[in-house]
Picture 1 (tube, rainbow, N blue to C red):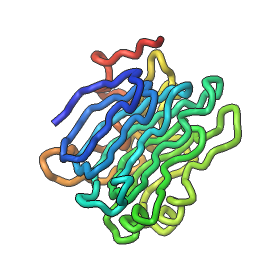
Picture 2 (picture 1 turned 180 degrees about the vertical axis):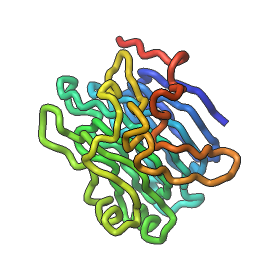
Picture 3 (picture 1 turned 120 degrees about the vertical axis):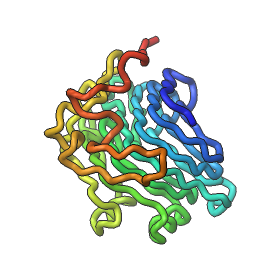
Length: 250
């Protein structure tokens, strides 16, 4: 198990999983020069309470998710279970156009993504790519729900797409339930501030703080049932990211 780790200003992905079943909690991925959270080749672990914070001068996707690029139906198929993620892209176009896509889910991976907050990316929220990936959704294996996506591509450029066209039919049908788009989730704009970010919802009277009910994770001894979505409990609760993380710039 992996807990309380910050990966800051690395020159590649912040956290990347190559197969296995490793579990992780309380992760902060800040300023990665490539993807912030990445998996491939059969990872079937669990993760909860994960913060992604990007710099637009040198970032790729918030999440990049793959099965094998050589055979999209390779086994064991990745199928991680992800709960309580906060993804803060960088909306500032003065740092050019990176930090564009919140999540690219492709190449036949399965997934569960619930209780998430996504804001600040320049182009779109999550997108699903490839027939093998869509098959895992259509057969009921992959799950998404209980999340808010807002402030996509609204700073200094063309508006982005909160609910990508590959995801929109599943949201509309209820297959991906309780996904709210283009409504403020309740994070401070300081979520995207590089030097001193704030990932805590402003209060319980927000979608993030509890107005949008979270999905209850499996009762398996790893996941914790909480009353909020995103990685951090709303104010005035303690913010687990404070006191041990640091965000020096270079």
